[in-house]
Image 1 (cartoon, rainbow, N blue to C red):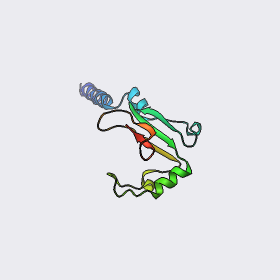
Image 2 (image 1 turned 90 degrees about the vertical axis):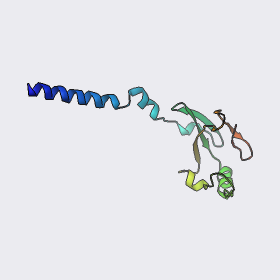
Image 3 (image 1 turned 120 degrees about the vertical axis):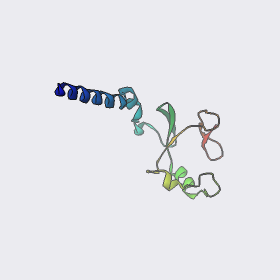
Image 4 (image 1 turned 135 degrees about the horizontal axis):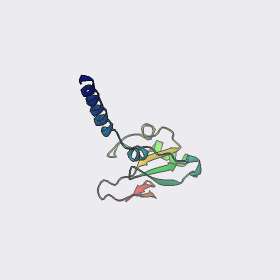
Length: 116
């Protein structure tokens, strides 16, 4: 009888732990692969990841130089370009507008970034 109770308890624990793991559809949304070779230099594409827009910009040498020479000390988040990107040719950012919830427009505004 103890063997049956131990087996039932083990099964209940395993089933309980299994219900806490993410389902297949959630795991599928957690990763995204994008073919970067199809994005021309200077262009920006928007892809959807976990229901949010992600902007991928293939930056030109002019864009990289302008960002590296910019004085960020007066910005709200004064972080240099070198600390924000892994590869200077690619800028990948999550595009969520914090005040209206809109999707910003690429290559707009004073700094030719994103504007909403």
